[in-house]
Length: 361
Length: 270
Image 1 (cartoon, rainbow over the protein chains, first blue to last red):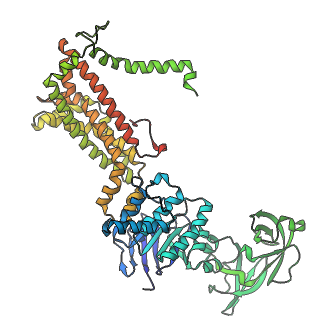
Image 2 (image 1 turned 60 degrees about the vertical axis):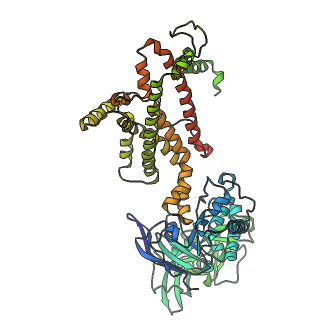
Image 3 (image 1 turned 30 degrees about the vertical axis):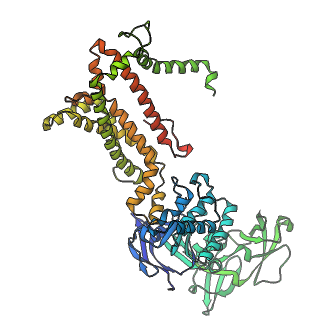
């Protein structure tokens, strides 16, 4: 069992002048639930299709389980794919769809039937053998597509936005089911999505892509709390960006100045240079504590005026105007709603550890 | 709007269909009439003309020739049209619309010009006239029709299905055999049937390029010179009308088989 189960080395795929995937290198471990996350056109689907063998690389190499698959056609690769539209064969029934890829394995009828039942029960669709694609709902089609791929017992399962076509409630259910399924079968999953919530809730690790390049690869927690750059910080969740400039550094910590807040010293996790005026501080809305009365605790305390609010049920987002700031700060609160504040006056507090210093791009 | 409630439109539609079908209905009507003259009043019911038809060996030779020409030329045309429509629907390439137009041209050139051109070329090469040049002419003429049918059918074809088959372990040929061919088969049969019908009743090309072998339309035209032979041509015409309608209905039905309801068409898009 090698540590790097899938090795992608300097892979590029260009379409004319468009660099869909541009010199990308990374590895995926065996049994990992790995997500490729990014906005549409970022190259994540092209990268998945490179892994499946539907696209050929202009440059670079791909290894799966120690085998060079760079120029291998898709039918010989140890990968199987769940397509975005599921691509269930319309002219044959569910059973024949699932058996489709087993022709070359030359199993006896009993063995084959056993395998079909096994994957059907895995996706909880026993009894659907005789149905045709047009007699199935979107969620059922997706399960059949999964079963059809899993019966092959692939080394890697590739999933191209498989939840995109489902409604929200079903999508949430399938997220949990897919995650459980992956743990049960132990197959390496490579999952493409543009939905940051989806990737964060399901994955062991996430690769955030933009413009054909990897922006950051981390586990979901790190991605959220320690973004490496503005793109990642902006793409994952909601955040406040405040222009800042750096002062002197003592190695561990650095002096930072934000016009509307003042000067303070925070950890310099990304080793940003001293006396740099092209920096940005990112503060998550939930890291800002909001109160109708003055707050004692907190590294930074501020006064503000609520300009606007949006109620989401489990929390309320407030848009708070701070003296000297160009944009209102977004702060979210579970405790307070629009009626909690007199004359829209509010008090805020922020801790230094919740401020991420980033370089402007 | 409810069509039947608007009397003017209702009459217009009735007149239109009368104009369309009454002349055609004269053939079966007179084919069952006793006597040899196409004139009212009708004299009485008779199947005599059908018996005459049954007993003319020349007619069956011509029918055999027509079926042979129709099957061979439509098979070739369907195949060529299949390759072309695959290319047009699956890929984007330079000169796409130009070559599409070029393939459809025989559709637009007056048929007589096509016939003369083929005759001149065939004779100048020094080859004998006969069924072979007719087949070649019909392939040329039928291919655009078949292509239009197949393109309409293939535009709904999901290329991911082929990728899924590749992904599940099948090579290019088995993917075609197990996925693309069965899914596209109804369209292929529809294209073949339409090509056959077009070839079957094609007159000008067959007229110019015929040798000693006649096709059915040429035979019928030849018979019109003899008043006595006319009624059994009427009988033959009636039979052909019925057979053609059945084939067209079959082709139309096949074209939509397995297509989602919203992609079904009411026309052949010609």
